Image (tube, rainbow, N blue to C red; front, side):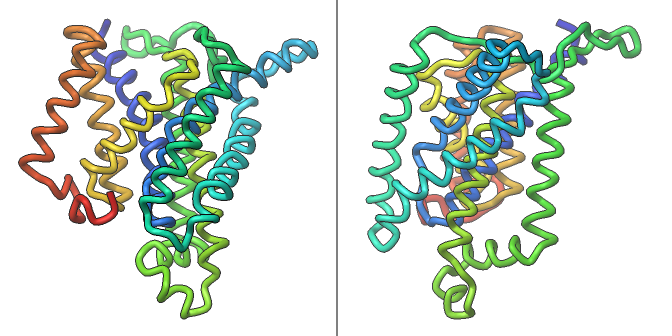
Length: 295
């Protein structure tokens, strides 16, 4: 495979991983606890893309893949609210370990439900942008990875604007830094936390729809995506959005290059060895906070 196409594939994978990691960190910062159902929200985003495309085809509608994404985002945002309603809200005044267990249980329910209704066979999500590759300077570049990068860039840019340039974003960051102080200042922390879960679910679902064409959609994929998000958050420094995004890109680049040189199996094994080595040498991650404070 030409180097340019290889790097584009790595960038597309990293962009999708960045969406997964950003949603994971947003929910982590808002709730102060890990949402272990986040990986299954990614998987269900892929399932939603396949199901919506099938329903449209059955109705005789030929919708392009890009047109399905808003529907997937809305459905996944609703799933994020469901996770908050079942896994966070009833346990909001309990120790974080209670939420760990609740979201692990939700992840198992999502996986088993997807297997029961969707089946165990892998399916292919519709491509975001289908067609022949572009040729740039004599190198053929696939449309799908270009579309994944473009869609992810728009989504990440939109979330950055929300967090950095709006009153809602500033209040959400205040809740993440000190929830009790934010409440004392009259900020509606609970509403913002629910909104953070909805946004995290929407980002996870969008990532699942984008990844579902290249890596297929399987009901058992949730733990794998969850592990990628957890690694990105740990490497980036717990709670650091820029750190998680950078770590997601590095993970994708490492996976792509090792897969091309050896195999996908070796890429996964080597990734975990490298992550372990990095955390032993730099336990605070790339950007920061003490590991374990919220893990």
